[in-house]
Length: 403
Image (cartoon, rainbow, N blue to C red):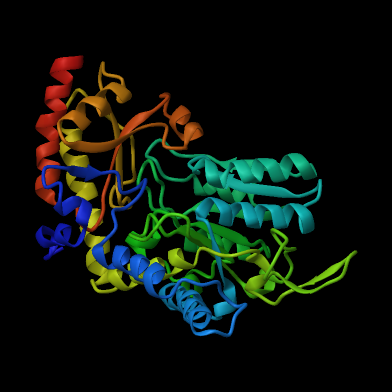
């Protein structure tokens, strides 16, 4: 991005720590001043509960919260605001859908189709749903080059499939999965698809209507917004069929001692006091992202991914996890030969580099490639090319000291 050298100035943590090279945006992004200020101003000037009051503060809080729903609707290009459900994050959104399918749409004859590169958040909820209904859980294989085996997908997709759950962008490999193609194949059999877009929303900007996704989930904190707020997009036809996720205030229409009826969408799935400040902060984060050109953001992160993969692939003592050339973005995972990834991350931290180490909540994927974990560098709009150039000699020092 043309402004890359100046973007870090928008982020208080980065601007106050100029020696820090933050390469862990796949875990959580840093927050721009505009997001921090919006949350602060909400608590200072608008703090009240939503929907329940007619006083000025309650109306301001409701406007901030429901305004965030409209902002997300526009950001994703959803057809209706009722299709936007606020959650605590991607994980809760997937659990909401999995619980609804478990209660209303799965039987012992059903199949749940996931992939071998899923984050645990898009695997464990479906394991729970399968174990409680007798449904079968199957995973699409991952190829040696880090791409999905689409022939295996087509073999396993059949009329018994109740739902397909797939990551748009791998949090480990950076693989961009062909979700449009997957959705078209599933829809040809009447099968709905859930897209885990936690990594792709701030990088690839999926359009839910162009994708024709039935469900799509993402987290605020990976999108330059606050923690504790996330989004579930769902087509009305499916949200209407799913039972409530939790019980309590705001999700009801009428309550008797022995029974209740439910509120309309989207509030049917939003029991209790929501994260109002988080929703306001999410609006500010989406506004900040849209102050840039979306294509430039995508190109920036793809270029950083190519640059680091090229640099690392030239080092014989680096074991680079695969990713399909030209179809990866946002993350690069690798190991230093003879050095445990946890030890490497610890030493890199002492040198001012923040990288992730471990299995990145994707143990099956790491086992697929015969390892227990890896180092991961992941990028954001504030990541600069020169920071990646600095990483290479730091890795050489780690190898010399620890190998």
